[in-house]
Image (cartoon, rainbow, N blue to C red; front, top):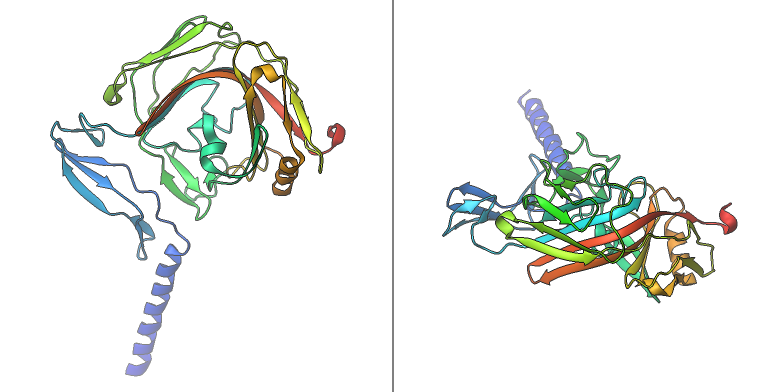
Length: 352
């Protein structure tokens, strides 16, 4: 009788251990939480990689406490330079939903410690996908980050300030983001300003279709908060008249054309394959001087795109733009002024 009871207890312990192991199976602890203020003069900083705790399935990250000479505010020591990635976008946009971000209407801004796929829109392919090939003015990207922004598999659903990691269906926090105060935009008609929402996203809810004139100096300024004052300017661009479709036929190069104006701007074509989510399995990005009037996508890039995408549900677009960028070791901040149009991808000749 004693032997039987002992056996039952041991079996029960074994099952519990199996469940604990399963909680950490395939889980990557590679997203440390943002720093926090322990009190008014001490910051707690986290680093990666972390370790998965079998009993809970949660990630635990190394941390250190550091005294702040000028006090701690918003998870950082006052007076210290912190990394920042940010953009202000002023687009005359004719896209139903831009780059998969429900919150973005074509005019907005966002600032954070690190870029993130769902929030840092201007460079989604370059920064979150792997460059697989390049030819001429175009590059082919795949695979991309394991990001899900819509229809995510995480249960329970992620909060608005989290993203769903498709590798293990877990919610992870977005990098720390910043409120830089009211952003004022001048040189547009009319001039306007933007205040952040509770997640520090800046949005102009209903921007006018005709927002600026070609060649006009458009300036963005903000007090900057803990990041310091910000002032950037770039010129307005001409309205964009371009092809509405692009054919990606196997073994065949293709050309995408627009009406050149010689206004000194650039044209960027972004073609995305795959379902709405996760991040695109494949993308083509072409960037060229506007005066060229066309860009050629060579057959090797066309074939590479087709091999990675059997269905097209993501929005592709073309943009005529000017931009000004501030780049340093700790900073990448830009103002982009552009005219954006939707582009349809056809995988057969004549779009059949």
